[in-house]
Amino acid sequence: MAIPRAQYDPRRVFRFSLPKFEVGPKTRSAGTYLSGGLFALSFFLLLDAATLSKHAKPPSDAPHDVVPVHMSFVDWIPAICSTIGFLVVSILDKSHLSAAFSGDAWGSSDSAARRARVVLFLGVALLAGGLAGSLTVLILKYIIPEYNGYLYYGIANVGMNGGIMLSAMILWAAQSGSDEYEYQLTV
Image 1 (cartoon, rainbow, N blue to C red):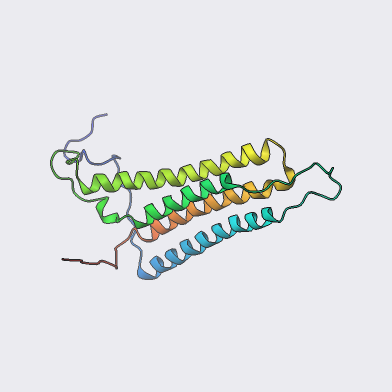
Image 2: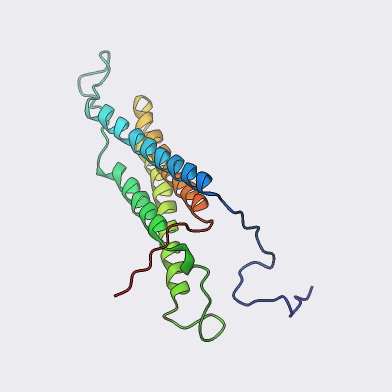
């Protein structure tokens, strides 16, 4: 199947164009508040698990040599990655992603669109890495050794990282419409 040359644009990733939905100011505000609430709820999950972990005691019928499982720095590394990824994705200026390329078909090496896409890729990679890291911690630290009483710590970690990723997607969708906050800074 040949691609018609009249409609082909080498800068496009897909042959078909995705529909662009416009969001109004109220939808934009609601999406931003929903994203912020989900972000806060996600951190509450991890802080709740960390608080429970700090005060965990072995069951009363357990032998004396049983030590309770506590959350350590390893549990916080995925949360740090997801938070940095969220910040990178949310701070990125979305107008640079669709900026026209200069120079050849893929633009020059210092193109603003190329740099914005690389930064977006790094942010999404940090978000995905945080989620994958939390799943790894859940499996290796809480499921395989069969710490049944402490499984909530791993589930809260996965829930926190998934919530941050979902929060970033909601914020991206809410702010993808027309930008009502445009600042013109000149020196």
